[in-house]
Length: 389
Length: 181
Image 1 (tube, rainbow over the protein chains, first blue to last red):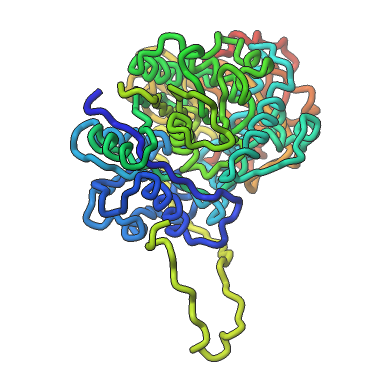
Image 2: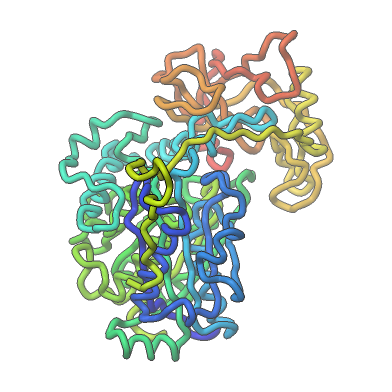
C-alpha cells in the first residue's frame, strides 16, 4: 500500500422507497453535507470527488454526473465516476482511497447513490431484447438457482434464509436511516411471506430504495488533525481489494465465485488477518437475498465450505454473536443499488468510529466492508480498523 | 447542517391562480427508445443458425470448451472462437427456481420454472423456462429438450426456443454440473 488513508466523515440519507421531498441532487447533498459536517469540513476543503452509481438505466438518467457536477461542488475539481454494477459503492470508495494512497490528494469526497423511484430497476434487469437469452424473472430469478444449488450442496435446513431475513430486519429497527422498519416482523411472518423466486420469499428480498451515502477520506496528517478537532477516531484503511471474473466461463462457480475468494484473501493479507472469524469484529456484507449470508460467510473464509449456514443457525451473526453481520440491517433493509456497497463500507467505518448508536457493537477494532455486483462477478472489500496500520 | 443545505421556499403568490395550488413534486412519464442492433459476427452466426433450428456454439482454442451463445471470444484466453459446433437438441437442468412474479413481455404465466439448461456438449448454461411438467417436479439433473416455434414463425431470435420440456432419460449426476451453470 501507499500513503495511509482513513475515513474521517460519513453521512447517509434517510432511505425510503420514494424520497418525494428531494430532487436527485438534493438527495445526494443530504448525504454529502452530513459527511462534511461529520468531518467538520466544507466543500472548499475537498481536493477531489469520486462517485459511483449503478448502470444508468436503473434511474433512466444517462451520465447524471454531467448535470450533477455543480450540485456536488465538483466544478474545477477532479471528478471521477466508477462503474462496477452493484459492487460500485465499494469500488468507488476504493478508487477514492487510491487517490490518497497515491499522494495526489489529501481530502477526497466519495459518494454512492441510487434514486430508484426515478425508474424501474426490475424492468431494467429483465428488458426484452430478442438477440439475448431472456431472464423473465428479474434479479431474484437470476440468483435463485445458485441459492438452490447452495442448499443442495450444503444440506442446509430450508429456514436459514428466514433466520437471516429476520435478523437483518430486526437490526434495521435500531438504524434510524434504514428504509424498512418492520416492528411486527416475526419468524413466522417471514416464513409465511409470499414466495417470489422459490426458494426466495418476499421478506427474504431486498427492497428498492432511494438513498445516498458519502464519505470524506483523509491522508494521515489530515486524519490526525480532524480527529483532534472532532474527538472521533478515524477508521484507518488496513486493506482494500477488488477482483472480477467473466460472467460466463467454463469452470466458473457462481455459488462461491473464485474472484470473491481471491478478493477476501488479498484484503485479509493486506490487513494482517490470518483467522478472519477471530480477528474481524463486525462485518457489513452485501446480502440482497437472505441466503447470501451463509454463502458469503464461506466465500470470504469465515466458515468452511458447506458450514456457513451453521453460523447463522447458531446465532453467531446476530448483534450479540461472535461475528455480527449487517448490524445496520444491511441490503435486505435498505437497497439504493449504487449506494448499497458504500453503505457496507461506511457502516464498517462507523462501527470502528463508534458512530452506530443503537446498532453499535462494543469495542470494534477491525471491521470488514464487502460488496458484490453484476452476475456475482465484481467484488470490492475493505478492512478498516481503529489502529493506525 | 451546513447553510448550503437550506433552500428558499417557492413564492407562488405573485402568479395568478397559483396561490393555493398544490405543488407537483413528481410526474410519471413512460419513455421508450428504439434501437437498430447489429449483433456482431459470432452472435450473427448463432442467430442465423437459430432461424434454421440449429444451435451453434463456438469452441475455445485453448480449452476446447464450447460456448453458447457464442460471443466470438473465449473468456478464458481472450482469443477468437473460430470453430463452430452444432449442438444436439438435448440438455440438462443445472439449477432452477420457481418464479411467482414474472417480468418482461414474454414471461409465462406464473408460477413457472426458470432454469439454467446445460446443452449437451456445451460448457455454460442458458436461461429458459421449463414447461410441460408441473413446476414442482423439476429437478437439478433433469434431462430436457427445446420446444421450437412453428417453422413459419422462425426468426433470427432466441425466442425461437419457446421453452424446454422433459425427455425420458435418466437424470444426470448433479455434481457433474458444477462449474457449468
